[in-house]
Image 1 (cartoon, rainbow, N blue to C red):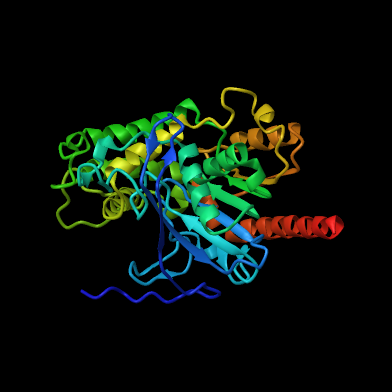
Image 2: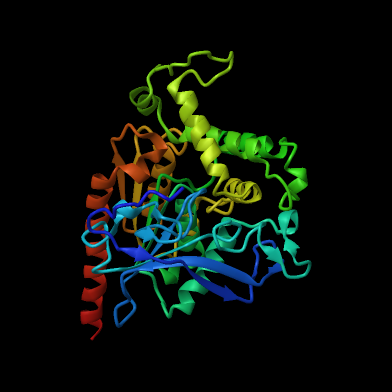
Length: 386
C-alpha cells in the first residue's frame, strides 16, 4: 500500500531531514559518566553572521526533533509546524530554529533502545536514570558544536517547558530569553500519580520482561494504555464534550465491551498508533525524569534565579488541568521577585493542555512581539556598546 501524499501547508519550511550529532558523553547529574551520545536534530532557517538569531525548540514527552516541514522519509509534517516557518511565530526568515530529540528518547537520540557499545545489545534497563538537566546538558553540547555562544530564546511546552527552566537555571549566561509554556517548577503529587499509573501499565504487560523485549514482541498493550491515560489529561472536559459528546458507534453485532462510545474509539486509536512510533522504556525513563524535576532545587525559586538577566514570557491556558495556570503563575512570580523582566499571559482556551499545540493565533501574537522586543534590546545594547 502506498503512503498518502501529504500536501505542504502554506508558508512551510519545505522538505527537511534529520541530522545527527555524536560526542563522547556527559557527566550526569547523578555523578555517573555516560557516553557516547548521539542527538538527532533538525534546523530551519539560517544563522546570521553573528550567530545571534538561534532559537531552541524543546519538545514534550512524546515529541521528537521533527518540529517543522515535511520529513520525506517519515512522510510527516512537524509537530509544531503551525508555529515555525516564514512569517510564523518563529519566523525562519529572521531566526535559525533548532529542535533536538532528548537523550533517553527513541527517535534518533541515545536512549534505552540504542545499542550499548559494551554489549552490542540495546541498553534496556542498563541505560542510566537521566534528568531534565541531563537532557539540557546534552543540548548545550549540540548548540556549542554549531558555534552558538548564546541563544536568542529557548521555548517549550509541558516537558519542553521544564527544559526551558533548566536552561535558565543551569546556563543563564547562554540564553537571552525564555518562553516556558504550560509547565511547572516541579510536579505536583497528582502529576506524579498520572505518570506512575502509565508506568505501571507498561511494567504490568507480560511482554515488558523487565525491559528486555527488543528481540521479541513489545509491551504494546501496556504502552497503549499509558498513552490513553495521557490523552485524557491532555484534553479538557469541555473539549471532550465538544469533540465526542456521548456519541456512539453503530455495530451490527456489538461485543459486550466494544468501544461503543466515540471517545473510547479515539483513545484506543491514539494508544495503538503511539505504540508504532514510541519505545516503552523511553516512556518509563522520560516520565521519571519529569517527576524528579525540581527547578527550585528545594529553595524558593526566586532565589535560584537571582543572578539571571534573561527576559521571560510565561504562557498558560485556563482549561489546562494537567498543568494548571497556578503553576505558570508561580514561575512568573518567582521571575519578577528575582528581578527578571517577565510577562505572564493566560490564554482563554477550551482545549486543555493540548492548547499549546492548537492556540496558534494567540501564541503567535504573543511570541512574535516578545521576540521583536528581545532582538530590539539586544541590537540597541550593541549600538550603545559601540
